[in-house]
Amino acid sequence: MHTDYFGKSADCLKGKKLFLLDMDGTIYEGDRLFDGTLEFLRAVKNIGGEYFFITNNSSKSVADYVKKVSRMGIPADKNNFFTSAQASILYLKENHPGKCVYCQGTASLVQELRDAGLDVVSEYSDRAEVILVGYDTELTTQKIHDTCRILKRDLPYIATNPDYVCPVSFGFVPDCGSLCMMYEKATGRTPLFIGKPEPAMIDIMRRQRGRSKEETVVVGDRLYTDIAGGYRAGVDTICVLSGEATVDAIKAYHIKPTFTFPSVTEIAELLGDQV
Image (cartoon, rainbow, N blue to C red; front, side):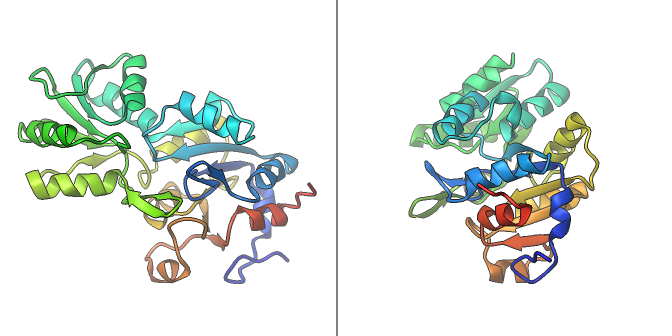
């Protein structure tokens, strides 16, 4: 019998067919691929499963992510990804069709919105009809000023993801959720968050692949996004301790992961990878 960090039997994972993986803090940190990641991905394939990346990080486009993981040696193409930026595009097209979007985000995010056919402005404009805030690694004082100014117009306001922090080599930096807290203090406005823990990204991927809830598992390092999202989607979850979550945090959090492992290395060993 194979057990997780808390001694719970995890043999059922060998029967999973759809592995939905977070990225930052789960399979890599910044530009450093975690030890065991490639072995883990091969192990998923070896048991007849498939893996897809569902990330709340909207700072990169899918094309950028494909280039990044390819440099790390991960076999993937654009069909292996579903990001909070893509989920936001779907939401905007469904709920605000034809509206001009003010986007505070990276140049990559802005371009991805435009490539999807949205009318986008990235500076203050009277044309803006809806506001989108993303995780912005290119944030400037001018962007902050423009966003606060446009938030005072009481336009519909959404944000790509609620993550408070993003892991980096020395620890963490503020993510989209923290930026939105800053705007709340300045303007009193709070957004509708699109990414995990909303179950939409998980549900969409599961339906696209024709997999049942029992065949699906979410793997991530954040309790309030990855694990909560999997819980709300009704699928099993694995929390890895290689990113934000700690053992004490897991014990204190009201939603528990189905399984907990130190890293994806231990999951690879359980799945029986022989590489």
